[in-house]
Image (cartoon, rainbow, N blue to C red; front, side):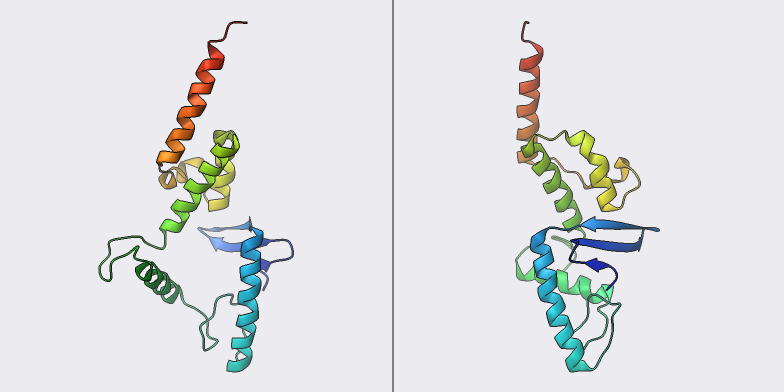
Length: 163
């Protein structure tokens, strides 16, 4: 598959929102994808299907549709108790992007990284043309607020020190 390079640990997202991008992935995802690709090959061999372009397939070897993938994620969220058995309330698959963005910001804050300098990197990774498109994903969590408060306190102490 041209969009998956597990040796280099990158995925290529083709023509999403009118453009393509290359995403670095963590080693744990590389391992999961290797496992999935082995199972995928077994399904394709058993079904007689030969689809070298489609990454995600159904058990019969046919391409997994966006609708089927969304239904599977909704089912998983319901099984985990994050979504009620019926209705449109509760967690939605799209919120994985929101959680990713907040967790990345929190990790940077814990590491002491200049979050403002890193925001363009996060925007690019999410496929946004600017930081403004990323703002909708960013929510203040108690942990993030605590980290910001600590940084502000450290900054204000260093500003008031006499030479």
